[in-house]
Image (cartoon, rainbow, N blue to C red; front, side, top):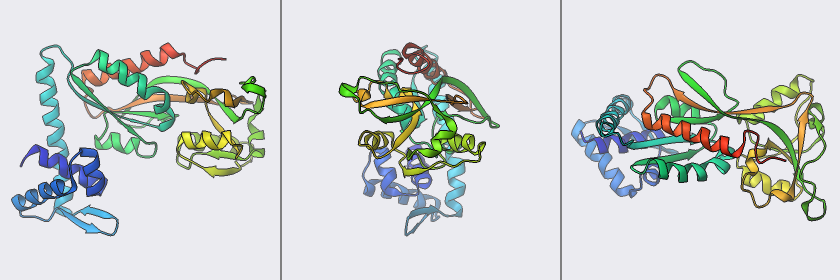
Length: 305
């Protein structure tokens, strides 16, 4: 069996789609399908079956996925350890990251990574719901999480702690009032809110905090993309709840008013998670340190007043 074929097969099986796997891998669908077929011929087994939504691994396919993951991880570890004997970090680090964090972290991280690790590669996958699953599967090396709960086999390193704000359209002349008066937590029930859908960490956090007062959120719109959410807030469709870091480098910052949420103060934590069952490479450890440096340079609570 060819390692490249195994990599192709694992991606198709995990994504349950030849189309999505071909985009991720950067090859054409016919070429990808041909490699899977060659693997099936070699093993004399049907590995994938098609359904109305994509493909599913057969019993033989699921068994091969399990072994192939281990083989690919071992091969990557061997390559990395041999190359690191030269003292130059190599290999590739894949990070799962929510879009709200990616807005302010991805670009400076890419520049800093290229400067510090010129012989290594970096992949960033945006998402919220599947980051823990990706970590468990080994699809990502690092997972950036919002308000994570301690879990077995997961190690956490805090990157950032910052307050949450009620975000509204700025109606003052020339956007002069960037920060408004505080709003009490229980009063959030009186606002039409634009929030991520469950199980986004901020949505769950808000609901759990408000339930202590016997109240529920009034969710006017559900949007998982913060760029879309901010666009609707700017047009007056409702109010968002988010940390100030979302606005780092945002040229539209002056068009919003941020009101701190108080009684109690709502503090959001951003952390990097790793799978303690998998050895952390020197490159991955270096990337964690790099993210801490970037966040530290920008300040732990956003862009400042």
